[in-house]
Amino acid sequence: IGFNPHCALAYSNRAMAYLKLKQYGRAELDCNCALDFDGSHIKSLVRRGTARNALGRHKAAYCDFAAVHELDPTNKLAVQEMRKTKDMIKSAVRKAPKVEIIPKIINVNVSADENSMCVAENRDKIESV
Image (cartoon, rainbow, N blue to C red; front, side):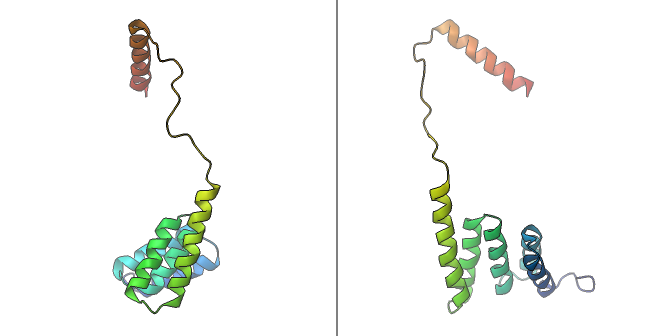
């Protein structure tokens, strides 16, 4: 990288070293650099997908593996990683805490004076931020 900073292969190889050291954020950054120079570099896409999976960014990882599959439909690793990533997404959704989307309305009968007081309090809070 010091001799030729525009070489996608060098960034991709360093990304692999970062993956082995479990420095996934750095690996993703190096893959991004490699893909800036060569957007169809398959190894960089696979390595970035691997790093993203390790970082919990499963949907982005799936997109990387799908791009590999689109570039090279015979790539067995891409198909295998897509399947594994899809399972990780399903598992993450199952483990996610269930939250209530619609909040419960506690007091519906609020007088006009109380309502204007609440609006004024909220405005003061917003302006102080």
